[in-house]
Image 1 (tube, helix red, strand yellow):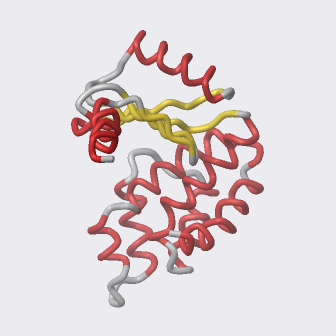
Image 2 (cartoon, rainbow, N blue to C red):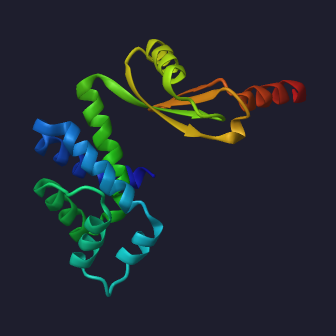
Length: 176
């Protein structure tokens, strides 16, 4: 994983510097092409030596929902020509970290056994922002294995109040 981060860092930093005037817009199209690039079938297609860079570019841009701006097309071409399509999701992740650092915020992933929406999500977000001391961009991911409660990941920090975690703690206490 460290290798991917090392490869992705220069791309993310260069894109961050080049798109300083429109970080939010860049993040939108970058996340979209990163989601497309993370597809296993596309990865297999892109590694086929009989497939040209232009064909890979056409497939990726053909699958995206919105039209890429010229900067996005140029960036995607560069990534494909350098054989780094598989690193695109990590580039997007590092770009978000840089973008969040400028805005004083962070991405937070809330894993929950049940859907969290509306007012409940707003309450959870407010509590987490107070706990972590910064503005959070909250995303909810369903994980039925948690049984109940939530598990929150903000960067390298984890807050686990799930039933599964508490059961694991009780198991360790009983075995000791």
